[in-house]
Image 1: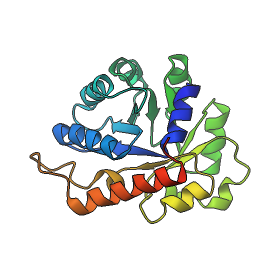
Image 2: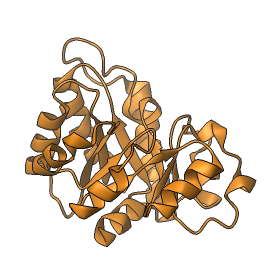
Image 3: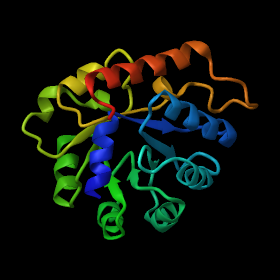
Length: 213
């Protein structure tokens, strides 16, 4: 799991793919990788999520892109996630036994916490990375002295990503603000030019600052 942790750090941002159009999600994943994305999360509340994870894991270079799942609420899905090729699993909360079960099976667990008490409990249970969710619940002074790596998710955008990364974030997670607002739409229309440019600029900046290896 240490290698996965390092890959996430090098990525700088996890692209969070959530939507009701599986074909569009798959296509967007490849578009993001072409822009420089190194870490992709497919949320399990998206239709055919594990089929998408399986396809991305099979077709993308595992030395260049690390694939995981998100919105893991049912720990009975852990084996299915691993079989599909997921290397990490995020959750908006910290479900009972998620951390322990994932780590027993070699899947990096990234539980979500919304308060310092929840963070302390997750760390006690063995969390090696913490998801701050939603990020708006957290002020930077609440994170001083925290040695466990943390990833803000929910509300991270092109305007505040630098502030998070410059103030201790191990990585950030970004959904709509990076991956686009069209992932629920029918059809296979091209990614909107303005949103695609935002993503392009984010990856260029990460490469400039060394956040993407």
